[in-house]
Amino acid sequence: MPAQVISDNNDYTNILTDTHSKCNVRAVRFGDIKTRLIQTHKDAVKQLRSIHDEQNELRSAYRRYVDLESQAKFYENRIKRVSAALREHEEFENVSDSIKDGKNVSKTIGITMDAYSVPLWEIISAILETTGEVQVIELESILSFLEIDTSRSAIESALKTHKDCFQIRPSGRSKFVSLKGA
Image (tube, rainbow, N blue to C red; front, side):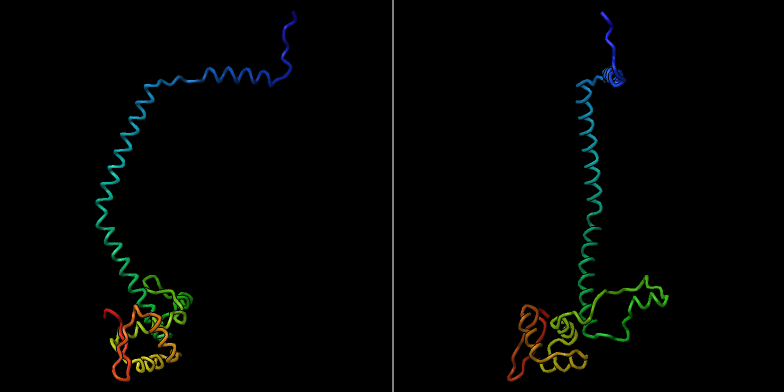
């Protein structure tokens, strides 16, 4: 019988690859797998315990950070309200212009805002934080003095819409307004 002739190189490659693959299979013992899994578990528990210990050490610093962040937001909101009430005051510095002029603004404390987009009720709130209780007619005069164009009806609407912020107290023919809880 004639010897079987392999017709193409792919057959040689397949035979060699199959033989090579069978020779490179490393037998894994089941006991080794169990040992490795136990060790992995112990390492994971050790790492988790370390993480929890570090978290406990940092917890008070984190709480302080969260408290400071809350206080910072309170003051940022106050700055926005007051800045909106003052509009374009000469003490305000436009950071973009300062950078263009070459000033170092790295230590500048600033809030990005548009003074004209702050609602009227927040501006009224900023005024009442500094004055306490005022008559509504005086409030209208203060807003006019600060060059904030508004009407009596807009003021009344802002006060009525935000009853949760403002306390209105009638006295005779006058109405007095103050911040609730102040």
